[in-house]
Length: 148
Image 1 (tube, rainbow, N blue to C red):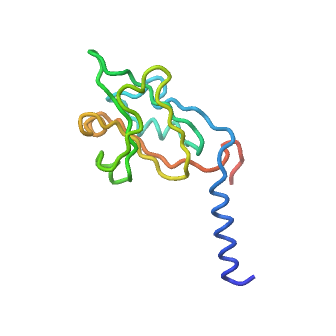
Image 2 (cartoon, rainbow, N blue to C red):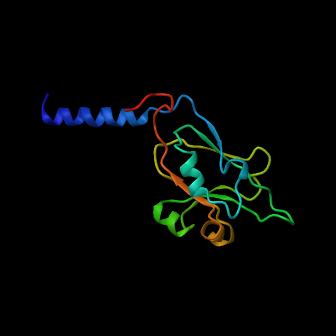
Image 3 (tube, rainbow, N blue to C red):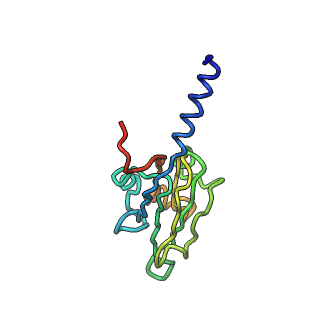
């Protein structure tokens, strides 16, 4: 096998191994019993509750706006810089202020790529001051496999 063919085979095997997805997907409540609210450190939560895997489902639970609660939403930010700065330019609204009640907003992690979530309320104040943001890169393989 020539160098070019070997390199092509390596790239194909590496790519295929990254496309294997978890057959034992989990449903994960974002923030655990805390839910999605101002003042909870979701970055620390994500670090202590990961790793997350492709096909896992994140559930964001938050009260719909009323006279005693602040409204919240969920944005998927476009890149790490946006995450660091809580910049909502080009972000995608995943869930508005009303969908977090009841069973919550469900988001399926469907790709092997970085994910950056934030609350966009008050023009990013909840993200910046309220620590309502977290980031992760899901693992693409089955969580029950043994990896070395």
